[in-house]
Image (tube, rainbow, N blue to C red; front, top):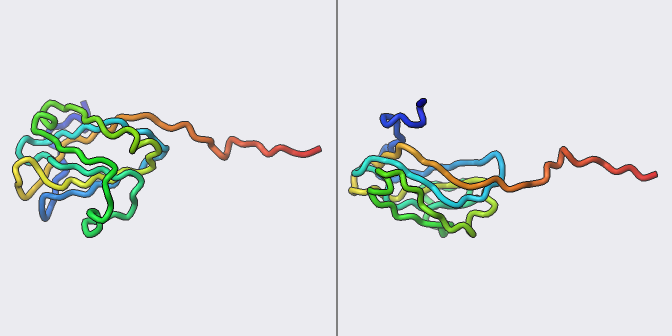
Length: 136
């Protein structure tokens, strides 16, 4: 089983209901859907996703338009239903920033038990594999 499926583990906001999560990827990816799991009352409700936006903070998160915005229902959180994203907006993703704006009940703390991202890697050229052609 491991930690991944442990229901007791969660990420919780500290001073209010908002969370800001930054995920850099080792490879360029194409992202097509995301899954969020959390408690019925304190689980995330409005999630704004930003593709390739670095150095975002709570002070400037509203200065940029999100690549996609997702409104989660309590059934999404409890039944582990993936949410389909705007695929054209997530073609060459190097990093993903997720802004959880609020939760299901308006409580002071938001809790997330699981985030799963679904997509594929983009085939890129590895510059180390290129060989220098010598002229004769």
